[in-house]
Structure formats: structure tokens, C-alpha cells
Length: 436
Picture (tube, rainbow, N blue to C red):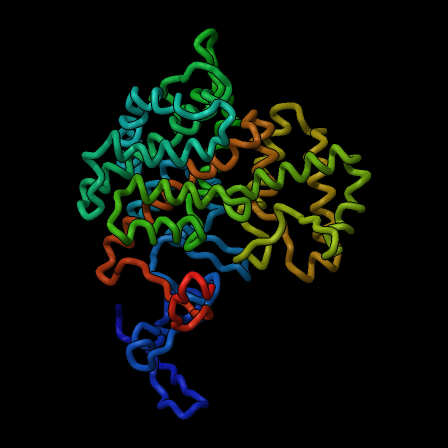
């Protein structure tokens, strides 16, 4: 850690002596107060449920300005990356800190694609799951099981092992997601096609069958690639923090990423786009656009229990920049597939219009987020609702790996150990059975 840029003085009203705390300035964003010596000097902890005001690490990967609605990967605005780069270029950027030139891109693509197949025994492993199991339940098991098949790259402290594990995870996640889908459908697995793009190969494994040729639609291919880019990383969110905390114990990369997959499953995190589409379908079933106004009035009523999914964000207090890009992609996909009059898309536009004009939502800064549109796009492509979070996990894997590798390379990293404000019983003795 660099020398403090300035210091803050912490004083107490109970007569305890005050202490000085170092303050550090990042290249952008809020300054941070270093409290590492607080317990040693005062015997006190800080209290921050949800870690909303706590910087858990030092990072150079992703920066979010929630007030401005800004998202940067290694300094590059997400709008430029989603427009000018493909997903594997973005992976290279997140992993190595720079965008590849033509030869570096070709080399990186080659290194990733040579790992797209998974061990054949993974097929037998799959058979242990019920056919109707949620794909994220299967994905949690499959990703964790990779360490049983590829134990030559499980030493988290070995840079070469981490490199191979990173390439394997990026390459194999599309294969695993597609396998989970095919298993649920009762269809044969499709092997990877390394002559296709990353997104094109995923589409082929998802939707092709052995009985006929399948051609990749370039509009859909680009839309899927953009979904991957927009979800590749998002700073220190719940699943990324889970991967870091899990990895801080020294466990293998596959186990750490499996922990991230499990965390992502939650409806407040990666499952939000699934919850959003379910909400739209419920409104459609209850009367469609004619019922939008009634639905939004219910949302305003705290006693109704009705929640508006796909709007608002823990960090963004402005329009989610990913949502704008996803809206463009949504229109392109629906036009390409002749679904411009798709009732759910019209319904989503009606919801958005109310949310952007009604003072209740505007004052609370409940703008549409990326989940609002990505679910509609994936549904149009043919990806079932319960697969949405699996696609999210596929895209986020590179961000998790980049964050994990950064943590391990940080000389200041230690095993994570949050503290607590204990409010339970003080020491007491166990009474005899007759006195309980």
C-alpha cells in the first residue's frame, strides 16, 4: 500500500484517546479510510452490514460510478467495448490489463478454443441429476467437479496453474451450460465447434442437433456476444466478493468459481433477469398492457407485496449504461426475428415509460437495469427462462477469474475474516436436566 495521501482523526465522546487513520485516494472514486489498526489500538470494530461503505480490496479491474451511470473495464467505457470489441477481446482485457492487437487476439483465441471440450466422464456425472433440476443447481456441481477432472491446474498459488485454469474455465463454461440445457431437454450433447466464434459455438452447442445442419444467425451471434461483454465483470458485487473470499483460503480456482456460481443463483443477483421475465409473463397473463397501470400502482403500495423486477440497482443511481446497450440489442434481435410486435417487449416499453415519468419511481431513481432487457433478448433467441442465470455465469466467469488472480497477486491479501457485533447471551452455565 502506498503512503497515505492525508489522515483522518477519529475521536470518541467517552473519553478514549483519539487516533489518526490513513486516507488513500484512488485514481477515481471515493477516498478510503484505512481502519486496519483500529482494533489493535482501540479494541473496536467498525459495523457495516452488507459492506455498503467498506472497500474490501484494492483493484485495478473495473470501476463503477453509480451516480453518473458509468462502467469502465480497465478504464475503457462499456459502451465502447460493447460496440467495438468482441467478448474474447474483453476477456483478454480483463485478464491481462490490455486490449490485444491482431496477433495477440489470434493467439489468445487459439489458447482458449483448444480447451473447449470437457472430459467425457462429465456426461456420466450429469446422469446423477434429475432431468428437471434447475440448471444452476447442475452448474454449481459441474464447475466444482472440474477440479476432480483437471487437478493438474488446481494450485492457486502457482501462476502457471492459474493461467491454465483461467483458460479452461472461460473455454468450458459454454460447453457446460449447453450440456445442462441439452440434458434437461433430453437431447444429445453437441460437441464444441472450434471453427466458430465464442458466441457462435455456444449457439451451436445449445440449438443444433445431429440430425440436421445448423447455421449461426450473425445478428443473434452478435447479440449474445454483447450480452457476454455486458456481464463480464461488475466490480465487487456479491458473487465476485464470494469468489475472492472463497479463494482467500487457498482453495483451487474451480472451487472458488463454483462458489461464485452458487451466489449468482440468488434472485437478488444473477437470478434477477429470470425474475424479471417471470414478472412480465405474469402481467401478460393477467391482462397485458391494459393492466400495466394497475400493476405499477400495486408496486407503489408497500402492503401489496408486489415488487418491480428489473428496475433499480444497488450501485447505479442513474440509468444503467448496460441497459441502454441491451435495449438497442433487444430491438435488433426482435426485428431480425420478426418479433417487433412481441407482447412482452411492448409490455416492457409500457413499464419503462411509466417508471421514467412517474415521480414515485423517478424520485427513487428506479431506472431500468440490464436484467430488464436481457431476459427479453434471451427469450427471443430461444434460451429458456431457467437458463438465463447460467448464461450470466458463463459471461461473468472471466471477471471472477480476473478478480481472483488479482487478489492472489496482491502482497497484502489475507484469508477473509469479517467480524461481528455480538448481541447474544453472555457467558452462562449449562443447568442440570431437571432445571431446564
